[in-house]
Amino acid sequence: MEDFKTIAVEGFDQLGEPEINVYDDGHIEIMFNFMPAHNAAGEPAKDHVFDIFDKWLEYKLGVPVQWEDRELFIIPKPNTDTAEKLKACLETFWAQTKD
Image (cartoon, rainbow, N blue to C red):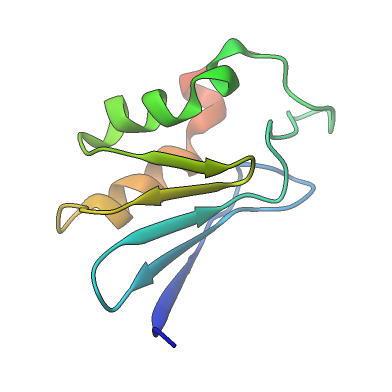
């Protein structure tokens, strides 16, 4: 079993925040509770960015992102600063996009 470090995210989804898991082999997994996320009103967001969320993350992070299933995204080869960028990106998501 691989060991990993979990990085908490705050402000992305008030009904269930995602977790960023950084594994010993270097890859990162992002597990969301809901996809699409819930907006500030607590309703599922209707923003089209959730149709291409893997590509949006790739654009923001500058590394390939695999959309494994509805709530799981994997970054197989992150840069050394990818986890920090990802946390900041998710925590400021609603300021970056419009619902």
